[in-house]
Structures are given as structure tokens and as C-alpha cells.
Image 1: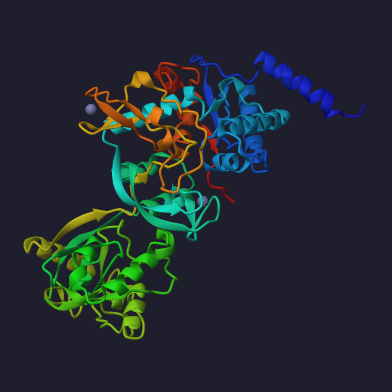
Image 2 (image 1 turned 90 degrees about the vertical axis):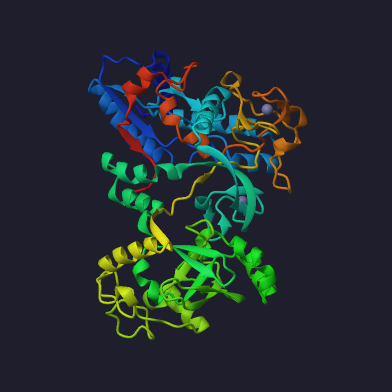
Length: 538
Ligand SMILES: [Zn+2]
Ligand SMILES: [Zn+2]
């Protein structure tokens, strides 16, 4: 007899589901096995081959573990908030909630027809108020602990999505979603203080068996370095502090560079003879993403400040200050000292602008011809009181000298920035905070969660950069939980990552209405035994 999948497969799939064959029980007497896939984003296109590939691989593992007697948790859910659905909804004039329902139904049907042994009784959906109640609850805990805060800052702004993007969402200066130009804009944003965990995010990698490449990526992304802050003085009397991992090379610092956004530029405006040229340069820089600006291969550009100079604290020599876009205001102090003899980027810049190049670590052929960058070890030269010392000893002596003379201090620095955690869009979790003129930002009471996303007629992003929720006066006007006076609701929503950062915890106890999951369930199912997702390893 010919195998007819249309007769056989739906029959057995129904029996499996009716009997709950793949349902995991929170039965702590049994040995557990938790298999986790990266949950899908239900798009309008339906499944592509990248979906069933990891699901099928882990399905075989899950089935084997069940046969071996394990209590297997192999759940699925939907990462359904965010831009793709919202953009589709706007284009086709269908409410994102309806689009999401349709997309999920399609994905579910397709996945079920593949017969993958997911536990459908634990299905979660990040856009379900019963789910995002807990996403909002987590946000409130972060706020109460000072780990969520609001700040004016420079952000990546997609000119077409009219939305703030994380650095990871900007590719070659363009929006990862829509390909449009990304510019820099100053906005008031909710931030998560991930930098508080920078050390743990490095040190605790020892406790997990991630692939070496993933660990290396994380360490590079966090970018911890040990160095010093050095205070240069400008001829105006202002202090320009720089962070450097190579304070031993201070005698070779022949110019400084500040970022186009550096606040001292405005302060010095009437002292700068070429302020118009500088302003034009600032405008150009505002159109580039951080990644684009710091690309090593890119042609160096900059403008020399005409009217203000800096003084190198180790030898009191006057050195020029440039504004250049390869220095970011968000990294370190927004100002750097340049040592062209030992840094390729500084060297190229010095050649272009005809600046002195002074060798301070011996070993290069001729630093006028090429930067000598292999200088992590070596002996100092042309360096006054640290002449003849090894690099290591020179660093130590320099930090001591800086501290004694109150010109600097030892300092650990990170490339990691705090996380921009608000979006001026409709299709996301409302941030459960109100603003009161008397009390400032106040969390809403936990008993009021979930704070539901109101139905709106227009969910298009606004040209002013405000969330579409800002137009909903009924919803916005509320009372302050603290003083009972008038207050306004926060109109920004959370990024898609909010719901997808903790879904693996909800699977452990998905119907709990008292907590995001019970303590017993968390203790029983943790940790995930096998995760299939993230970086593709070849
Ligand atoms: Zn875009
Ligand atoms: Zn108040």
C-alpha cells in the first residue's frame, strides 16, 4: 500500500494531542530534560527552512529522552511584538493584533503538520496580556532597583521606521529592518543598566559551556580594559579628560581628538574662528551610525579647532585639538589623546594633517614611514621621567605620577553601553510608569498589571518621533499613584527583546497568574539542558 501522509499523519497527530503524549508535567519526582528552541517570530510569509531545521534536530533529541524515561519539556511560543508585524499592518491597513493572530495561526498549522513533538499546552505569546503582564512586572522590579532609568541621549534613528534602533539593528549605516538611512538624534530614552553586570557577564562565562567563539564575541562586545584617565587642560582653562590603556605613551601624544557631539564645542563657540566649518562637520557626522564611524578602514576626516588648543600634562606642550567622527561621545569621555607613532589610525590622521610623530616605544624601523604598533612590550624613549623603563613599569609609574599630581587616575573601562530600552512605536509592551510633575517618574501599582495596550485608530509612527500612544489623551491622563495628583502615562513602548528575554522561564509554569513562574517550577526545570538557537556554528 502506498503511504498517504494526508490520511496517516493528521490521524496520529490528533491522537498525540488528545492524549497529551508530549505534555510535560511539573512532576519533581522524575528526572527532567528541558529542550529549548529559539521561539519564532510569526511573520506573514509562514515558515522558512530555517525554522524546521533546528526544531527537527531537537525533536529527535526530545523523543529519545522521553523513551529513556525523562520528563521532557519541549515547548514553543511566539515572539510576536515588534516592527515587522507593525510595518506590515501599516502597509496593509490591518491592526497589528489581527495580523499577529493570522500569522500565528498559519505558523502553528504548518508546524503541527510537521509532527514536531512540542508541548502545545504550554504555548506562550509575548503579545498576550497574560504574558506581558510579567514582562511589565520585570520592568517594574528593574525600575525599583534603579536598573531602569530615563536619560537624554544620542540614539540611532531610522528615518523611515521613525524609530530608535539598537546598535545591533544598524547595518552599514542603514536600518536592518527596512534598509533606510539611519541618523543620530538626541532623545529621552528609557535605559537598562546592563553595564552594572559587565564584569559578571565576562567572569560568569566560566560557568557555562558556550562555544568558544560565542564567549569570545561576548568578551569583545563588553570590551573591558584597564587603563587610566588623564586630565588635559585646554587653553580656555577647561579640563579635557581622556581614557587610555596606554598612559605610558603620553609623551608621544601630539594632538587630541574630540567627538562632534562633545559639549565643549558649544561652550567654545565664540572662541572658535572656524565654528561654521565645525558645525557643518557635526551635521555630516550626525548621519552616520557608531559602527560606520569607527570602521578602521574608513578614510579619516576631521576639522582642527582654530582658537583653542590643549596642553599635554606631562611636558606642558601645546597640542592641537581636532573634531573627528571616529571618536564617539558615548565611549569613554568623548575625547582621546592621539599617539601617531604607535597607532595606525592616529598615524594616518597625523600624516593627513601634517602633525608631529614622536616615537616613544623603541623597536620600529622608522615611525615617520609607518606606525610601530607591536609595542605591548618594549622600552620607553623620548619620555622624560619614564625613559628607559619597560612598558609595564612605565604604565605603573605614570599612573602614580598622574595621581600624585592630581592629573589623572587608574580606571577600568568598558565598551559596553547601557541598553536603550524604549521605542516610539505602537506594537510593544506599554512601559508601566507615569510621570508626575511633583513626584517625577512613578511606577504604577503591580495590581494594575497588565497595563494593556489601548486600541487605537492610527498606529502609524509620528513625524515628531513620539509614540502613536501620545495621541491617546484618554489613556495618557491618569492620576499619580504617589500623590494622587494629575499624571501622564509613559507613551514609549518596550523593544521586541523585552518579551523574548525571559520566555524560557515562563514555559516552566505558563499558566501561573500569581508569579511569572513558581519557585518550585523554576528550581525543577532550570537550567535549560539543550538550547538550539542563536549563532549558527558551522
Ligand atoms: Zn527602518
Ligand atoms: Zn505625584
